[in-house]
Length: 353
Image (tube, rainbow, N blue to C red; front, side, top):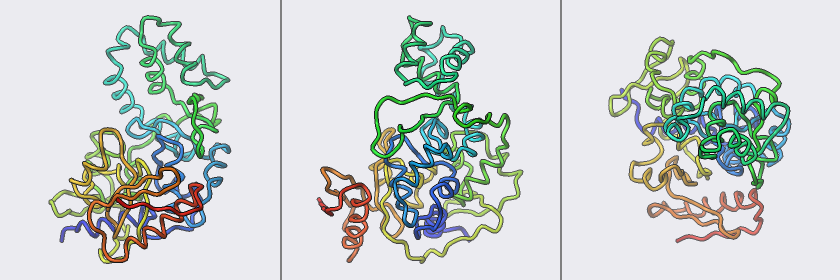
């Protein structure tokens, strides 16, 4: 019998720590999720708050300062937080899609640049020190004065394993992005040739059951069908007849399992980790939530994306896509008050359209 969208929804919520808050450390949760989307500083904190019992800001900030968690370009050539141990192999696997992204975005602008020289010069500038992105850009522009400086700095970030050191990436901290050689910050070299099986295994533990297209959409890698087929994985069919893979013995969660309301931040893993996202939102709602490169903050009702939220001047603004079931507004307001307190606004103020 095919797996229903409801079963996939509840199973995914359980693996994403969204059916009930988990008694895990922040480091354990980040490793469970493989990597946490981190384009901006605050969303990873909100995502962990929604998933963990008793999570406090310093639980993540201390990991970033302690070099147990690092922030850098990883999956899909976008910013993520990962454990230091996972970064060493994830960054190596991410190089191929990152090179592809760099070529598509900046290949024309850097067509006269020797990429080997650019890589070597970037390493030389960063060895033993941290530079802001603008400073590295300016140094590279001295060598290639006729090339768009942004293309040089962005190419360096795609070609060289770089992490962004704290306070960058910590709660409410902005400013110029620092560039540090990953190997120097971590004190270890990257893994030279990590197995793709590891990537598939870790993805399925956090997001499965899922199709090959889902794994590829999450990772940015291609040609993973042969990898999945050679592994010892369990297979299912979804309601559309697509093959879904999962780890042997990994439990499914009953479709009628209660799911609490939850608030998800910008670019949350749950929203961006699938090619087919119907297990948590309809195609129509996906078009409202995922606009260009942006993935807006959402709230879940009965496990599905039911609306978007924002905090404006200390007020939680909630915009449901449709009328909410009886009692749901009260649940959202209670959870929203806790979210506001976590974000530094103890006076709970909520506004509906």
